[in-house]
Length: 373
Image (cartoon, rainbow, N blue to C red; front, side, top):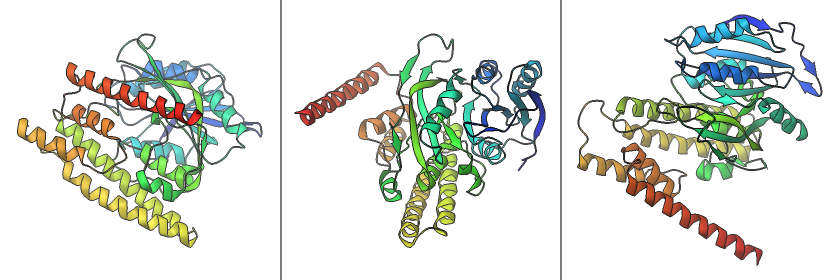
């Protein structure tokens, strides 16, 4: 693991460690083969209004000009922040890439940003103010976000609120029931001890948010910020998109990453149980068994990377995926499966999903009115 891959520092190289009321924070921008978008992402990092701030521009051994652009921009930077530029010696994958930086950060908080997203200037400031207002607990801070397509970020944006609201401390027994994800990954900031009190993540995964979600359940709280603080790009190259039967190699990478994420979380549970009381230790062992079962089930969804997928094969995969155990509600499962089969752009399906969501929204409104009465 290339923990010492930081190559140069720019900007205010004498950045102070901060004071009690203004902790040193690390803003880390993670990139891999994103030369098309990286300039906007770096500009978003440099625009942060919070200080003292350490900015880490970290490239995961890109094969394009991503790293060169980051280094050129850092060299020209003359702002108030300390800027470090690093490049992995080999491609680590998203999970280990984030883990390496998280375990070697100087800041009390690690604000995470992707190389194709754009953070608003007040993002770090809003996160720190919220964290301070809750007495700086261990955990994950998250916010709302703006979604935009693969184009001009100033056009066709939709705003989405935080995935969960308020301050949540989740009991392990509650989490084990449905393993709910409590945040949107592109909006997160993690306290540095979530990396340092657990073993390093297992390599080979493009997914880090599942592990960080379970670590927060084990040892911290989830704190939401109502504002949208990140412009998140949704394109075919985005980390959370493009998983379709027409691209079995990409799909298999996604399934493999899910499996590695489960193995990492299982190992975290085992380590946590060693210092926990008997009740929590038993809950850890129970959840480990669930992870083992999910791991086995996921292995059945690895696709042959050559061959033809006709109507019969697609129908078989549809029902198999629909029945796969998980936390998704029926409408969300159907939406996921249709996207996987490449049918999500069909007009009839778009109308059906919109109509079902409308019905579900009407039911929620009726329930709320009933509670008020």
